[in-house]
Amino acid sequence: MSRLQTPDNLSLKHRCYLSLVRGLARLPLPLLQAVGGVLGRVVYRYGTSYRHHFDGNLVQAFGADAVKKIGPQAQAEAGKAMFELPWLWLHTRAEILQTIRSVEGWHHVAAARGAGKGILFLTPHLGCFEITAQYAASQSDAAPITVLFRLPRQRWSESIMRYGRTRTGMDVAPADLSGVRRLIRALKAGESVGLLPDQVPAVGQGVWVPWFGKPAYSMTLAARLAQTGASVLFAFAQRLPDGQGFALSCRPPSSPLPLDDLSATAAAINQELMKLISSCPEQYLWGYNRYKTPRGWNAQPPEINL
Image 1: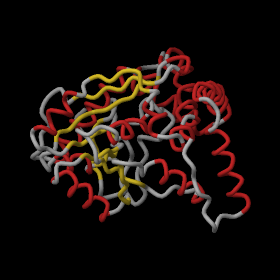
Image 2: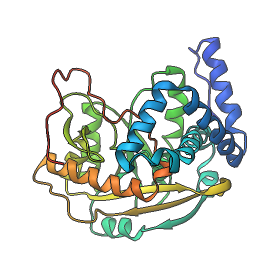
Image 3: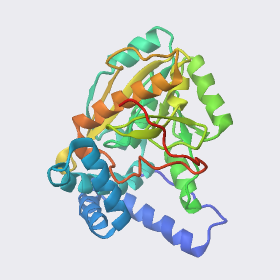
Image 4: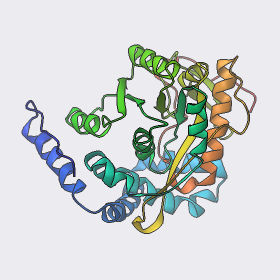
């Protein structure tokens, strides 16, 4: 396991939190995932707001039966996604790569690099979304890769998150205008960028486009980055059962993105993300309030053609 220095300015309480994360990281990954699976269902049962969004999103995407058919496993997988993070942040690159059992579609990466293009990896909150950038950073035809880094609300966790995301071949850019400029420069230089595009952005940074049959405020950043001429690849690391590791895959869009229009591009990206999520709905984080109205939007969401 990698060694992390404790920041000097942490309070005693936050030092205890950090020690807890370190302790969890020392446990075997299969055990962490097993514990996370149990606690994921506990959180669902007792988290009223979380359960409301979880069930509502599932019903919107797959109908009323989805709560029973997909819900229980999705609850467990959400817990696994959280509990595996300490292990992924603090273990060495070699240990992390050993958990990847198969890789599919990597020839698309090699082709993009051979053509001298930058590579935009788009990964929804599906499966183990932390490990895709780690793998890309380890491969000569994808490294270096830059990812956006938003400061966590719990500032004690900043050092550990930054530590886990700044390895050899991997760097972070702040989630502001300067960071966006860094991403654009990286792509134009033929480098790689990783982005989680299924989040509700701030007002002025998104458009209302369909998401599982309902208008959702969706980021335009991915569309703007695609306009650099970079190759767009959708990446997904599926969590294998019984702690066996992960199966990573990446693929290009099923049809060319309409890059001349940001709204159309954002809608097309959403369509590709929905296809990916539908291939493994049990491992998507359904508890996120994907349909929320961003702060500062003082009107009803506009009507759009679905």
